[in-house]
Length: 482
Ligand code: NAD
Image (cartoon, rainbow, N blue to C red; front, side):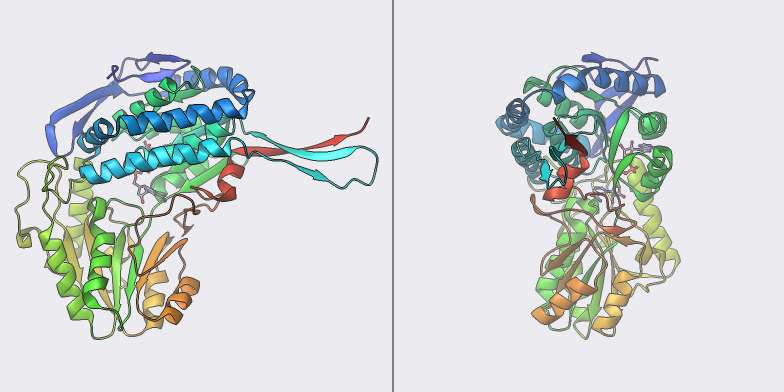
């Protein structure tokens, strides 16, 4: 591994003021991942200047060269899959199978966007006068990608991939919780042949560099994935003339109808709630059960929650990793405490697990709250941990009303044998992703991905679809007369 550095102006370098921050393994905080540059405004400005100097040459390369760089990046990832996945587990905490799957998806994203390099198409228009009128799509210039820690390589790949395919320069600001994954991504792209300077890596805390990067007139588009409060802040810093893609949080419901098999419903709900330790924007946070299968569904969810084995994700016996940081652990523990203070009943918590919690690391037990009213904080706020709230609904209509009574609208699922109801649900629910008889989490490579309300600003949703490529290009209309 190279030393943990920023990559700015085609050179690996420390923060200009020499500042650094540490990242530690969340399953074992005595394991130091590294000390990374704590960038400040001066580093951000240098990154902007560096990419601005290199981007035009990249925009002028032919599509085949841009395609090759992205394809080679995918090849390198697959050739080193095991080592990359182990490193991701060590840094972020997710179990090895999830880390492996994430790097695989990252390679697949690069391949998908490699092929898009050839599809930057314009149009010609009927013209009443002499000559020809046509439109061209050109890169927006510099794309700023700001990303979270929970999918620290696959989310960046669906921003950096389309940005580079269409000839943009990129400033990449990874999460301060996954700086090593950020560095790996840039190393791989450079090894694959990306010319020096076309990408800049700015490590550190968003609050230190965000306003400088987002507010720069030289940055043509900002693509952000993270929490709603940060998205709001970025929206303010960007001003009215900046192209912005904001993909944010969720409070995702799983509705279980009375005709569902309780075991299957619980499997779908528990998978949605507890995969990735509940740290997915699409995680199931609320289970709304209609009818008298409620107790059976709760029993089955609790049985699944108890059976998780928590520990270091490199251990093949382990089925749930830690929270990504001490701050995340405290946040989730505070929400659990808030639920208990409201008088909510816990059907499964730390004392109920079949295997004990590890003595060190940022672990929180899978937790099941039951009979949670819609007015509870736990029913409304994103928790981002392995906590699920089960509630009763008297009817399908009441379940829909509860499901939609939150500020977010990212993903939702329904478990039922009644396909008529399932189709009605797809129409009635305020969510950008609707699942029928499968968990809220887990999305296709080639379908648009994003939510409604506080979950997204609705600008050319991330991941596949024509809208993605539109976000990374701007249209110019040319009137040609001889
Ligand atoms: P976060 O908002 O704390 O941070 C995200 C990124 O923004 C980080 O790189 C951070 O350094 C940066 N940042 C922080 N302050 C900034 C500022 N003032 N200006 C510019 N950048 C700033 O989010 P997180 O804790 O890393 O991730 C968890 C959140 O992300 C959850 O809310 C989750 O639902 C959401 N998320 C959404 C999706 C989606 O596709 N909708 C996917 C994954 C995660």
